[in-house]
Length: 312
Image 1 (cartoon, one colour):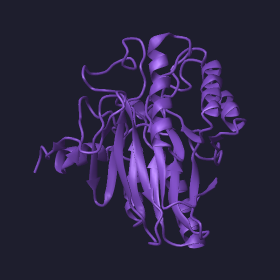
Image 2: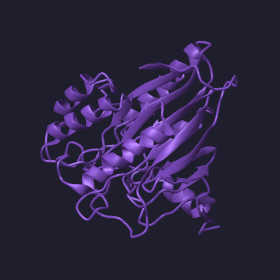
Image 3: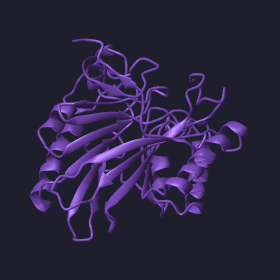
Image 4: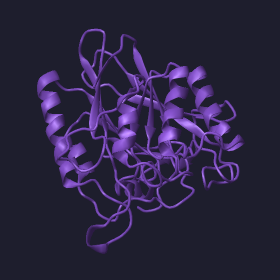
């Protein structure tokens, strides 16, 4: 999938864990949509990306259609990756895919059927000079791990790691060196390492729910000097960013209001929001990005708390 952009920067808005249910559930979901709407109106993103658990619904087809209508009314281009809850309660993933594929405002592809998961695909962002400046890797991080009864959260399958490496090499050979970002739901095991050993910006208010098995996706990223950042959700009250070996590992900001008003669970005083990601579109072969948070009260957080490493 290709996007051509003529500006000096490209702005992405990450929606994390909206957990939409009926879309007629009263104030909690109204607050979720208002937050997303206000962020779109004030920040004016070029692309909105839902990094999983957009849905948590027994009537997920109805809810997804409603969200598609909402984004169409906003005239907002958006992209989608599956989280562990999107296809858990209602319609299976193939039925939800048909809604996404038929939505003119949604960027989504099923991807190679030989690869594990639904929706492993890329978005290439081209500049005004017909150069690819960024590749966004959109990946399905699965749900629960069923391998050998190990338990815990799913890991990126070897077919996905191979797909990334092969796709990366093909794109680089065709278009030359450029920068890349990754968007999926469940954090990589390296999120533990970056929090424990590096200075991070932002908060960790709950355990990092990463898989027990490390299948090597992060190592594959390090093989390419253009890999700049990873963006996940899953852990509603974590929002930290830390750099590990030149790649920034980033949480979004929990977006959804539901049930108790905090997407199923939350932390008192921890405002909901979205993460904004500003991509450089300059003449350099490998551009970088900046990031900040837009919060439910309309404020912008550009200077998060600093966390020093807990381990030497």
